[in-house]
Image 1 (cartoon, chains in turn red, purple):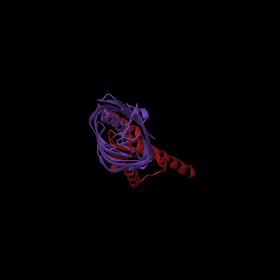
Image 2 (image 1 turned 120 degrees about the vertical axis):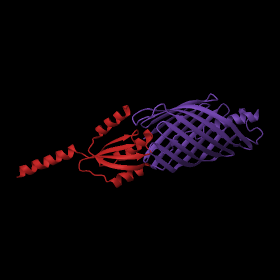
Image 3 (image 1 turned 90 degrees about the vertical axis):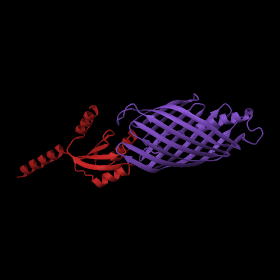
Image 4 (image 1 turned 60 degrees about the vertical axis):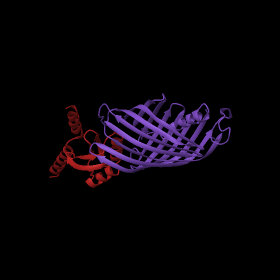
Length: 110
Length: 234
């Protein structure tokens, strides 16, 4: 029984890791490297943040969180508003930051 | 002769004040350090810290030097973002600033300045103040700004109006070097002692490069003076 529960827990952990949530935030006002740098610095300073991707081209800020961490939409919206930008949309997806980066690169090449 | 000398000195002095057209506030909890050189003997260093995205404070030190005199100014300054407009692919800003400090002007006696004791002090020092505003609008390939600066220090008052228009040959990404080609127009007016000063419009062509936390701007005015500015955010 204990063995079964352990296996189930391990599977659940793996599944969570495999579908780690990425938060994608559409932001208005992102026009220069200093804007991106400020946002990146603000989000990286949060203990919940694992990695951050900022795209000036797409007006997008994407971040992944550390295991078991959570950041509410309200917290994110406040962080970005207090950085001087306007949040227009927050979505939670299963795309990795690498996938987003690849997609943005493809769009730029088109 | 005397008037033309004063105008020359004034133009050199004026060209050093608050020339930096970059944003005085980079981002929240960020420090901005700037170093600027202007041909004709101007060196200015500034450092600002922004606790929040909409205000910063810091110090500005300026030295102006030519063959006939030197002027040093140190000012504590506060910058405030009055209004920001965030658009899908653009940003507009309205900044205001004010500063107070001291200024010292030294002229060697051989310069002959102030010989009649009426218009120009031979040596002077005292309270200095400055204030101004800047409005800008930019995208990843277009930059425009308008700026007005007022400076006052012991019997010298100046106003400088500056506009910049810039285009980028490509729209930059976060990890790219951004390149802008800018055209700048500047007009000086003011008073030294009882003498009113007004220059024509001075034009300058500039190249601006920035990436990450590094910013470099360099160019030359239509009067043949080089100017360069280095800025870092951290």
